[in-house]
Amino acid sequence: MSDDEARYEAMERIVRYGLLRISGTPKIATENLAKRFGYLHDTNYGVTLDVRSEVKAWFRVLSRGAIPPHTDNAYRYTPTGITFFHCVEQIRACGGQSYYVDGLKLAERIREIDEDAFNVLCNVPLTFHRHIPENASTGIDAAYYKVEAPVFRLNANSQVVGLRYHPRTVAPFVGSETEIRRVYRARKLLEDTSLDHSLRVQFQANVGECTVYDNQRVMHARTSFEDVTDGVRHFRQCHVDREELHSRLRLLGMKLGRRVPEEQITPGASF
Image (cartoon, rainbow, N blue to C red; front, side):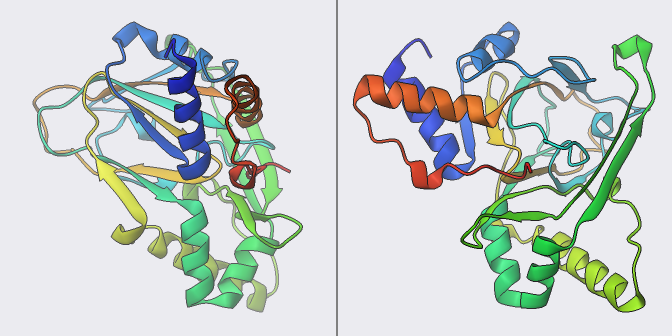
């Protein structure tokens, strides 16, 4: 990552595909790697969060159960941007595989299946919220977030440029019976379609591999490993802002005389 050409290629792939896998990352290098792409983003979970599986987990992500496709921090005005998910320990089995769903392709598929559901997901604000109690033992600060926003964000040309969705953080929808039926029908189609294997890339990360993904474009999930007793699944996670990565990509493009794919750079799910 000390090579500008390699760093440009890495950032361009994140812009084009929303996903990048980097191998050979030392255990202690998560933050240093992320700093090559942007300034580290602090949250109530801290700059870096250790996601280590526990038998009796207090937090869903620390459990061994399956986690459905979602984006993180959907309840914030601006969800976290570029996520670095670094594997530092791995179970010795085929369970606990990560998979990623391209939200732009997902939106296209939903539009093909049901135009009304697509319009609901683009135009009807949902309430996302989360109350997080303080956990002094893990250094997590108390927080209470709440925002109203649609699942898909459109640009001026009615193109989907980002998404936010986390099923466990959506508040009950309030409206007429007809509106409620439309919203829940659209949500069900979204969740069902996000499980379509043709829209995902799935793999078990190797130790030393860091997956970098655009949290406002790509949904992430994992398969269950509840029956696995051999080894521990341990990842380190941190974030940088999307606009900072885009800025550095443009600066590197100018320096290297490379064409920056501006048509692929989107504002994401923020508003």
